[in-house]
Structures are given as C-alpha cells and as structure tokens.
Length: 119
View 1 (cartoon, rainbow, N blue to C red):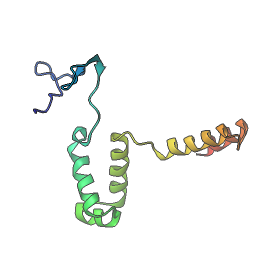
View 2 (cartoon, rainbow, N blue to C red):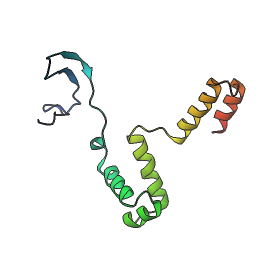
View 3 (spheres, one colour):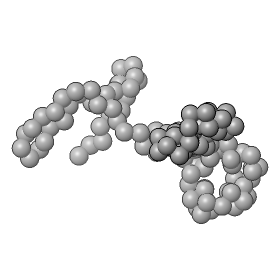
C-alpha cells in the first residue's frame, strides 16, 4: 500500500482526509480528519538531536560532546523538541498539578492563585 500524500500537489497546502472505508465490510466514515503528528513532521535539526540524545542514552553531557555544543544549546533543543511533540512545558505541568489539587479540594482558590503566581 502506498503512503498517502500529505500536501497538495498544486499549492503545497496541508491536506486533510475526507473519509475512511473498511476493506472488510465496506463501512464508510466521512468527515474532516487530520494526519496525526509524527516525528516525520519535525524539523531536521530536531530529528538529528533526538537521534543523538537517544544514542547518548539521555545524557546531556554526552550529547554536548557528540554535537560539540554547550549545555544551554542542548536544553534549548530539548525544549524545542518537547514543544514540537506537543508535550506540556514545566509551567503548564505545574499549573496542571495546582488545578488538580484545587479540584480535589486540597487547596482553596486563594492558595491556587498564589501557587500559580509563584510558578
């Protein structure tokens, strides 16, 4: 089976999927569907960084040596990769934890606001 094309052959715009059909029973589902984000959609720099980081088994120091760059550069690449993959930032994660505590009644609104202000 061929890979579906992901961009318009005329204008290079992003394509969406209009429908799916079951090859077994013939059921058809139509609507507007988007391709799932995958590592193939990442910038080449980030894909290369991910390969190095995995090769270095998550070691920032080893990644620095392999890429011949500084600690801040590696941290920046990690942050860019997290954002490109749609992972929450540290602030978003901390805010989620505060909201969870508020939801469970462990803290009140004033405490939550104070905690969010300090994050």
